[in-house]
Length: 86
Image (tube, rainbow, N blue to C red; front, side, top):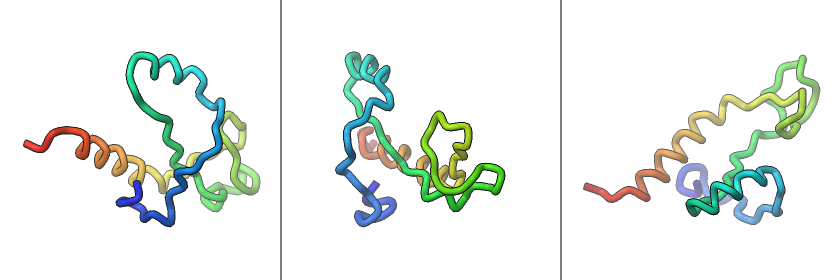
């Protein structure tokens, strides 16, 4: 992610959360991690969603569609770095 958006935009020090406790069952089968991409400060939200950012599972949550290219690029680069170059 640092290569994609710059080190100044990546926070690798994230407080532990129980946000996906069911994900732990997947990690028992395969190694992995949970990635937070961020959703901004709420500037992308329409007036009908209220002010400011909000978390998932909130009736006013509105995903920031501008993050789709960044998220997709992250996963492509991750797969490219993991798979052998042929």
